[in-house]
Length: 261
Image 1 (cartoon, rainbow, N blue to C red):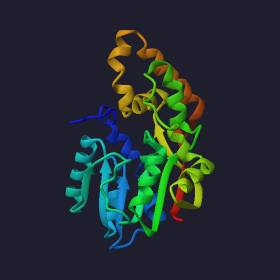
Image 2 (tube, one colour):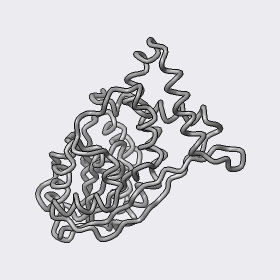
Image 3 (tube, helix red, strand yellow):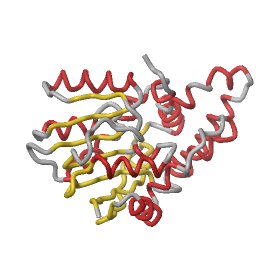
Image 4 (cartoon, rainbow, N blue to C red):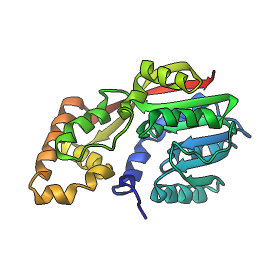
């Protein structure tokens, strides 16, 4: 049962599209058999499952139980044994200095308290831990979508900064440094999603965004839902490109590697 808006929509469909970024993060972390891994805000378990398949001991943490239920079923289907914990990114369940690898793929960036979340990354990391984070770059498609839809949605919960702060290399380096972590590398990566047309893309992005789905009935009753969809389609048409008769949208993200200072 969903307890947050992350469980209100069809987010697992989006998570399927994000698997290449999870693989990039696990590859960058060079996860090995016997590593102890924490995947923070694991969602449906993309990175956690990839790490477990390499022989790591894995804890996947998320605050949305319905997503963890999907992750647990995926693990069972693959014959993998992982630990799944319901917890906030600012109160992780991993012991102090436990993790050889700390991962978060489009997860920890949504913490309400960025500084507290960064301190938790540092707390659970072993002295030589490899920390790898994937975060949407400011101005990239999903942050732009948030801006485009903001006139019709409630304001986001109070936080110490926008989620895309984690996708700004300089801002993230400063944030991690304040928690005793040293950034060692940043690269800009891109995910590509393809759709038949802008309408199909808009339906996908809306349907997988729980915070938007949660407002659909209200907006439909007010006659504003078609206006919201039109605004999103306009953004999609501006950002997308036609490739072999299909619409392709690029989602740029920052892949960051860090370690305890």
